[in-house]
Amino acid sequence: GVKQSPKGNLKDLLWFAVLVASRGKPFQSYSISDKVFLQQMPGSLQVDYFSQEYKALADLLATKPISLTDASAITQRSLFDTINFCNACTALKLTEISKQG
Image (cartoon, rainbow, N blue to C red):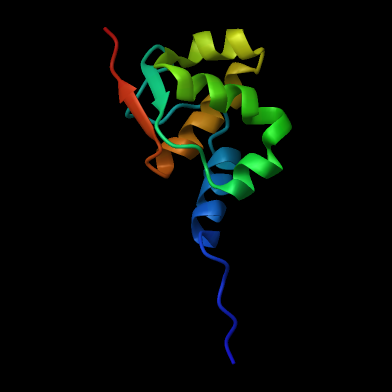
């Protein structure tokens, strides 16, 4: 018979693909000065796989709306990685973004 993929597998693939393909450039729908709030953590695969790299960033973004430049500075993650993470979460509609300026 045909094997079924694990639940959420396509979302995991999309999240990872956007993370890698973003290359440190924010989506056109927002800028690095806009306030980003992570409404929901990425699925278990993403958080487990990238827990050491992105857990502090995810926790901060889930606490309060914050600009990516500030989030990068506070967590000491590069702005490049911070933007990639935000893009991946935004692609799965896990973020709320408030325009600034």
